[in-house]
Length: 140
Image (tube, rainbow, N blue to C red; front, side, top):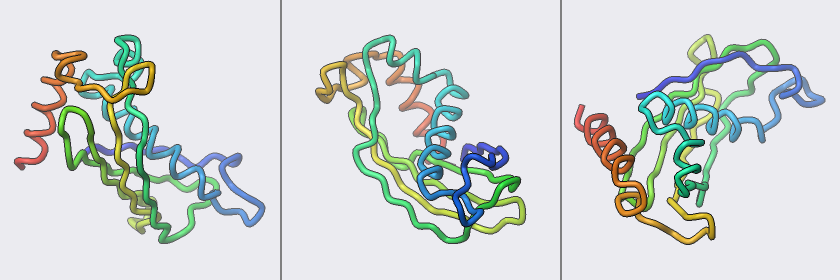
């Protein structure tokens, strides 16, 4: 399971002094970017090679509010990989171990025309890295 940690910034809070709900989606993306960079599949490089991976579905369950100055950790894991699609589950946890949010996202690989593509055909080396890492992480 990959972990991404940082502190809540003031601009992420709303008039009630809690993190605005839209920021959790950004945090999930920050964690995904960190994960892919950590395994040698940085998003920007994949996109330069002509493949993007937009979100096709996302579901968040808010459990407890985060506030300015809190430290949070996004724990994430890829739960499905088909070569054309992948799914991720997340838990966002504060410094006291309280679950702030649980989420799931689904993604598809697409070309610049937003047409679905097989990563295995489009960028075989990246597919092999992704497949190997997915298999290793889900066999533990």
